[in-house]
Image (cartoon, rainbow, N blue to C red; front, side):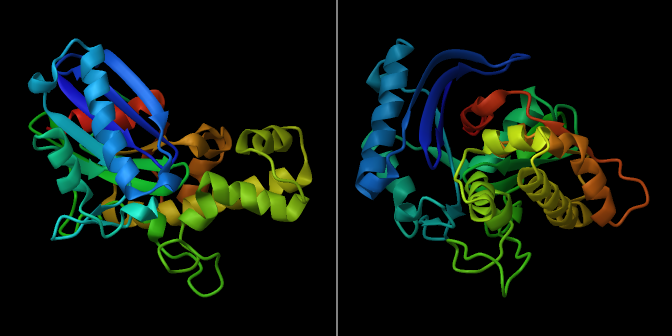
Length: 302
């Protein structure tokens, strides 16, 4: 039995799961709003309470918590403080230590995209791949690297905990949109859900959800169709940088933007245009575990 927590920008989910089988056996699950506008202390308290709540739903006592893993945006400094999180109230804070104190036990933490990639490599669309790159296209843009060794998928964090962070590759560092990281023109400022919605609003004069943009593009609306074609090309251009360095067997897409059909119908061709190869062998796959891949991967961390 393991507890996994996925701390996202808009929602936080926790599960109790039995691992070791061909598929994850979820015993209990609970999802709540992250409410990051309420600040750092609230997130710490809420995370610890959620772990206890889901353990209680699984029939586990507070004194018998199984190992806990937490996935979240960003990584950690050498002093175990949060860095690079798009939930900016966490940056610079001792979140890992404070959650452990609130729970009274050690907790394993990892980047949420690493957790997503780990789950998909263990149970999902990247199962059997020697090297997998998991992509999060949602409120933000992230990535995680998983290498399978001796039959066991393992995350590759890198020397500074930033392996896979393709969302902050600068595409237009001088004239691009400002990014929360302090730079301009990062991949995230073009390919995240909010970025695509904002670009459409600027061009069409109307703010609508991503799914509406996709529907309008499929119906032939010029603004929506042109915007998505442009963003698919940027997707290929940005992801080609990763392929040229990492050369994974499979790229698995997750997050709300990954539900755009155009990423699978036209994305591979865009990727092939920009990748340094005469024949693109890397598979671009949609997630197999739904939006729970991150929380399931977190449960695999301990």
